[in-house]
Image 1 (cartoon, helix red, strand yellow):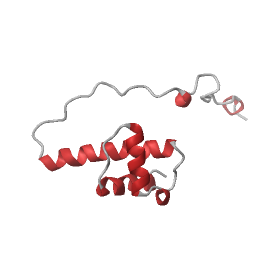
Image 2 (image 1 turned 60 degrees about the horizontal axis):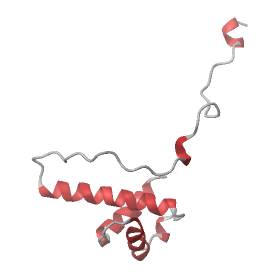
Image 3 (image 1 turned 30 degrees about the vertical axis):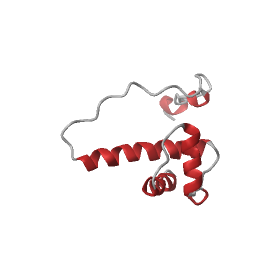
Amino acid sequence: MPAAALKPKPTQSTAKRPVLLDLPYAAPLEKRPLPPGRPREWYVTHNRRLKAMRLAIALLDSGIYVPNQARNETIRDTAELIGVHPPSDTTCHMVRAFMRYSR
């Protein structure tokens, strides 16, 4: 048997370094302006996706893991709780889609 086969391979372990999942929420990084020259619809869709992602994360943090549990009223209540304007029906649909495809 070759000597290389007897040596254990080094692996990375999270036990030796802190896990960053339990740290408290930090403010987002400084906002940068969006790129100029795109059609208005691109900016609307981009901002809608960002809002839907924030809401999906807040719902997951609150214990709602299945899109069926996230009704429009639940999503709008969560939006009020985190300080976001109430989302439209389209944005609520997008939140459920994010929750569905995150698995």
